[in-house]
Figure 1 (tube, rainbow over the protein chains, first blue to last red):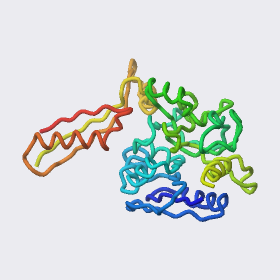
Figure 2: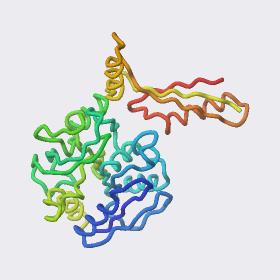
Figure 3: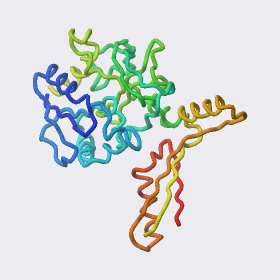
Figure 4: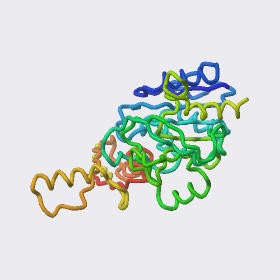
Length: 223
Length: 80
């Protein structure tokens, strides 16, 4: 699988993501600096990792979403390349208009760093085929602004089209997110954004490998 | 030089946890009967030139494309 990780100042989960991608696919990902306007040929997956791009100035992900590399990522997504945004990466995808809705301050107003339970609400996607429908998995979260919001019509569309891919389960919603939404995808099904960090739960040294299925699903699709 | 002020506020119906916390703190300070506190942002912008209509059109684009997230926020523009 040929993958690439987007790098923007202030992101800090890029190394974890690069390690996870290397571990699961056996191939180190390329890195895409924020100013790049052309991407390597033949990419199967582009990942926007977590962190605090541009210090979360203005709104989380707002500045990063306007960097040149994101135009290239949006073009690649239109051509069908699989795109995954985790945590700040999810916020960047939303700010870039590649996913609907907005991610607001946690209702607790607190930064949450803990493990949650996720329901694989849609196991029939490029990102989740290695899971069982409605399977409950463990996953770490670490964010201050993960409170997903969408207008009622948009929410209805997301739910109706099976685009809510992950939901916080067993009363572990850490941020007040509407309908317990933890991750959504675009209408074409090739762009996924999620707040939890699957890259931090992919091998026994992490205490489990529940997050591995996301990367393995994309890998299986690319193969 | 044209000066403008952009005010960005949350749309009605969008939960504002920060506004709620501020409202609670105002109550703690002894201010009674305070409700509906909403937190927003203010941007002061200076633009070279004298064409006010063009500046206003540009600022509107700035709001749409960056200063406000129109999914959750409204904006208003005032000019000198």
